[in-house]
Image 1 (cartoon, rainbow, N blue to C red):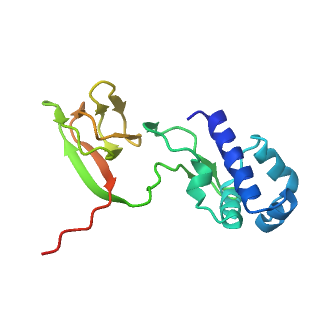
Image 2 (image 1 turned 90 degrees about the vertical axis):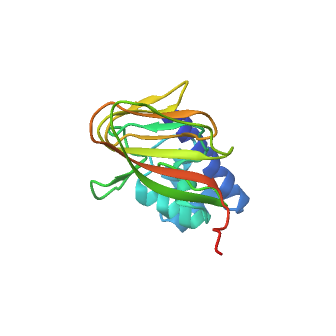
Amino acid sequence: MTEEKRRQAFAGLLKARRLDMGLSINELARMAAIAKSNLARMEAGQGNPSLETLWALSAALKVNVRDLIEPEPVRMHLLRAGQRFDAQAADARFGVSLLSTSPAGAARDIYRVAFEPGKIKFSEPHPQGTIEHVMLVAGLAKIGPVDAPETLSPGDYLSFSGGQKHMYEALKRGTTAIVIMESAYAPRYTP
């Protein structure tokens, strides 16, 4: 999602939620302890709210802060290690990037994966609705759907549908990744 689309989606969600709660701009600004002019600019799709402002708005609007940072779900998401953060703190060198939200009823399993150059690991499709989240920790790798893999460097993040044939190819020795498999929640089997 481009920065402009993200700003417009945030503005739409902010205004819709405020109106759903029957609040005026003045009332929401007072509840969140932010300037009315700043809130009006945000609802117009302008400005760049600080992390503290996002937390204050999420509390006042009774929504999860993730919904303000990433108002629209995306099907494939690539975040390079050096890209700008979604939100910055106003009083410290502290930035956050929302990598992924957990859908209601989802289960997530976390794996550390180590792989070496040579043979490519091809994976058959997992059940529909499975999403793979990959954060490359070390090395260099080509990962993703077989028809559109991405080359990842340390710190890069990629998410894609696991419901299609996909691949993991190490391009450097010592390649390591954290992989989070997200799927529909199923209770654990306990004998």
